[in-house]
Length: 209
Image (cartoon, rainbow, N blue to C red; front, side, top):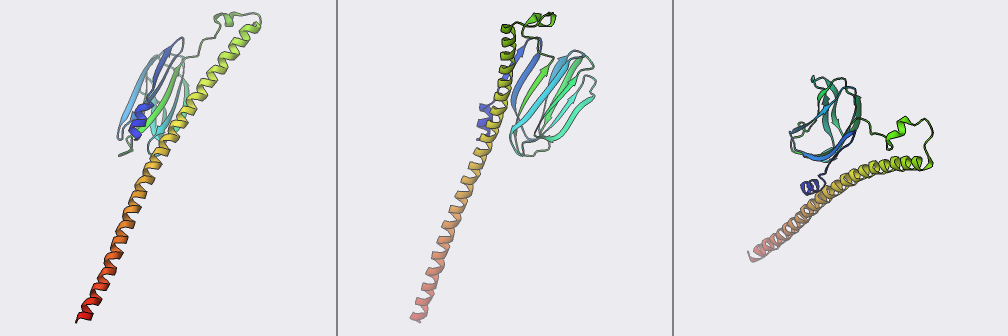
């Protein structure tokens, strides 16, 4: 059931403007490690945000390294985190997620990788010597609010997916436990009947003698 839910929430959305951003939700198998690569120029601000959606204790190992394999970030068994850095070298940066410490539990991991700063909504905004007009100010404010709404929606979807997966797993365990309890009660009842019948059978044998 967890695998079906995992397949249902796999999302890949990438968009390219002056900034580069990518969101991905993927399944990380037990004893597995997956790495992603991005070509980044020097002096560019980068941000990686990740969260374990389903699986086990909702934890994963994460590592970020630069083009010379220098480790920039390393966390062990982390449920979620956000890391921001400025690239010092031009080249391919690597970030990996590892579930090698788990022997049988699959994980579903979401990450959002952002490279660079978003350009201003109004291209001439940086060159303005005067204040923005009321219309421009309203547009900028609406744009910032919509970005905030999208960010909140993403986090609430992740929380909803995490809660749903936990509820389904708990329901499955409760069902198994109920079935086990029912089987035990039936076996105990049958055992009691057999024991009682054996008592009466022994009494009849003694009376016959």
